[in-house]
Length: 149
Image 1 (cartoon, rainbow, N blue to C red):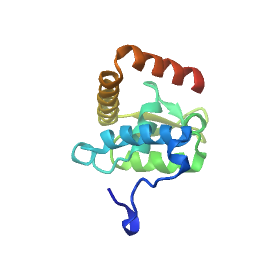
Image 2 (cartoon, rainbow, N blue to C red):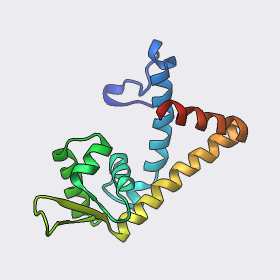
Image 3 (cartoon, rainbow, N blue to C red):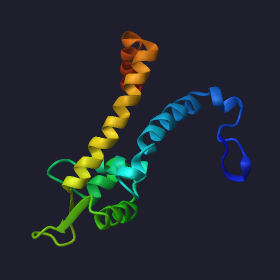
């Protein structure tokens, strides 16, 4: 596979065996699975949009809170929300008590997109579980949970 200027999308080097490179390669596999048929079902969405949609709780969330959880600026997150709103994946309203606060909720279309991305992630998890065996895969999950938490 090649990328810009016909350079390979994965270059050999000491970082390729580095933990960050290994985790990046695993994450790349998940992204590829999500995007494999994304444009066909949910045109215009990138992995970052699916992630943001998945972060929105059922009752909605304030832009400020979502930005903190997503580790984005309020402005950047607001731009994502505006884009998702134009496409019909979210809706947002100003709170009556404080018009400065914007509450964001997923629409039914946004819920469908979240289910789509979760199904793609589940397919990768099933593949990895089959490849490693259920016991090793569970250890991997527990280890990542421990390291990330």
